[in-house]
Structures are given as structure tokens and as C-alpha cells.
Length: 174
Image 1 (cartoon, helix red, strand yellow):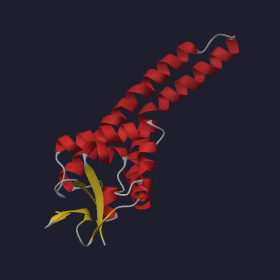
Image 2: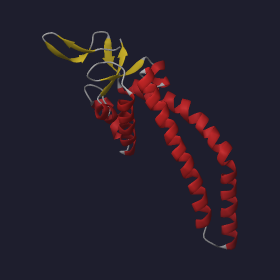
Image 3: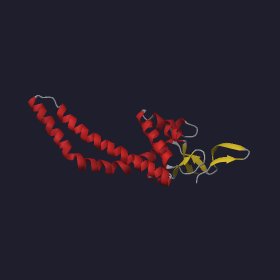
Image 4: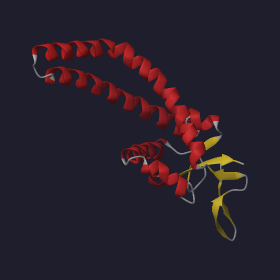
């Protein structure tokens, strides 16, 4: 448990002694580690499963160019195949983040760096529901040109939009 400090005679504005909000750059490094952990196997799997689709797409484009026809048929088939793979990737990321945030207090990248995702009110691990909300906020933060992630650098409590949406902090021991 990483307590968010509340001492008599009233609440304190920061985490408990020995605990600090995790800053922007250490969180970036954690995200990069998670990207490698999730991304590398996924890219390998993508090329293993979609390699023939890429080859077929290239052949279709070459054929269309040789005959002077439009390549829209080629693109439709290939994009549908990639779209399904992207959907699978989103489901894998969802499971990775939600399970690790809620059950272990952080992703593998966060845990390697000593970071912990906690409930803003109690300082305890978050549950599945809050982890789902945090993931939704994570997606929103990314869709908004990563502004929701960059927000961490300027927020006094080092919260990104996903943290604010789910009422969480990312903390580390000092």
C-alpha cells in the first residue's frame, strides 16, 4: 500500500513521506519498456500471420499498375485484414494494462522502475473498474495527439488525463 497522506489536523497536499509522484520522464521510460514488451511479440506475430497478405497486396498492386486499373480492390482486402489485427492488438493492450494495473499495481515497465498506480483517495491498488476507466482515459490521451500524456509534465500532482479520469496517481518510493 502506498498511502496518500492525510494527517491530522487535515489533509496534506502530497503523498506520504517517502513517496513521491512519478514524473514525466520516468513514466516515458516505463511506457517505452511496455511498448517493447507488448509491441515486439505483436510485430513478430503480425508478420508471421499477415506476411502472405502483404505479399498478396504487393502482387495485386503490381498487377493493377501493369494493367492500368485502380488498386482499390487490393487495398480493401488488405486493410480489412490489418484492421482485424489492429482490433486484436487493442484487446491485447486492454488486457495487459487493465490486469497489471488492477492486480499488480503497475505494468511490467512501471514495476521495473519502482512505479505504482494507486487510488488517489486511498493510496491503495486500483480495482478492475478503475483500471478500465484508466485505460479508456489512456486511449483518449493518445488520440488527442498525446496531450493527455504530456500533461503529466506540467501538472503539480503529475497526473495525465487518464489519471484524472480514473482518480489515480503514479507514485514511487524516494
